[in-house]
Image (cartoon, rainbow over all chains, first blue to last red; front, side, top):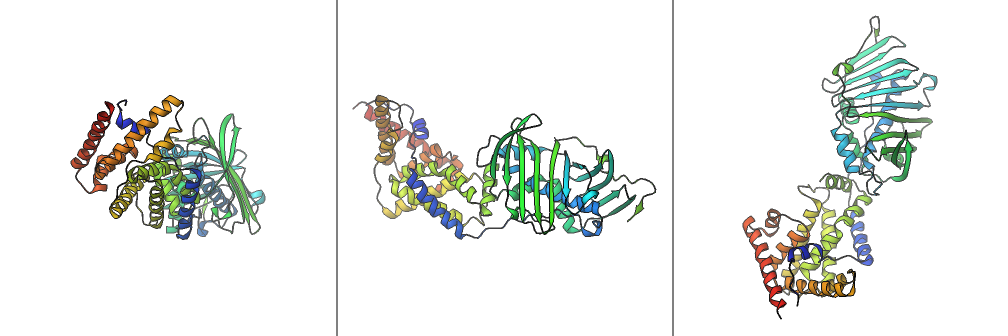
Length: 285
Length: 181
């Protein structure tokens, strides 16, 4: 008989059993039955909230709507390249986003109850401890919202009405805003429990992207009962960063749809950007 | 590790997709380990199923400290050892495993040689003291570190390393002894 020279390599690589299809299906079916009988923690999706105390104006309703859309689409990041192997590795996307200290992005939104009051778009600036959102009509900034999660304050400045408000965040707002805005990984994890549909690839702004979609209305809790939902996320195959996020939800006669794009991930943001700018002569609300 | 943490998080929230993914990820390695430890594929199937169901039943309170595969491999080793102790009978080599593996080889000559090598190795593994066989298979087939093997077998790190080394030396001795026959 020939001697066996490399015993360790043979044990490591060659002495493998492979489950045939019947065995695989049989065991997996039994395990799944056991799994279905177990009770699991339900996904506790947060409602991105700017509380009623400062949200009486149509403009602030818009901010809530933007937050909802952002929550839906931000949470989808982690799905990229997940179980389906779309080409973008979700774990790498997650790590990349976790490492991104700050991000800038554009929000374009339509809200059925706002009509002409809706701005054309908003620019959002988000760091680990602060956020700012400027709403635009044409080239003019119509309102700004500043959140300071360390000092737990929220400020709103309405340029069209020349009014502003500054107040402490209540506990719920602090928790929800912090979860929504400062740590996308939290959102990512919240959404990981849901199934999604792969959309394949398409080119967006000259970048080849992988896309996925989710349509389960229970995916998000909004300020109204969501009856229909379509949310999509597109990630650049080359960079692994999200390029376009799309969301559309409706219920109770309300419909919100929008996109997040023009991302600048891992951006360097000056702290002064987050200091509320209140022009002279503005009245406090 | 991130992959495992997120898989576990999804499992705790009732994701069937996560269950399929975890099962598909570890099935082959765990089945190999159980088959080699027990020498019987029917028993290996039972062990695989028992381990997964027990894992699922404890999922709500389960805390991950290493890799999921490492944890499940330890469970397979413990469950296999329980079965072996209960049966008090040790089958010889897993011949059916060698036969199954033979079909994966490219040419008739290579296939025959590889099959013969594996069969001899499987039989030799079956003649090792069980603790040594377990140490060898856990280290080489599931990638467990000696520290983890020591935990599984409730022994010191040095003893785990020794069991592995003695096992490999005995295999080499058995197989090289046969080479001259």
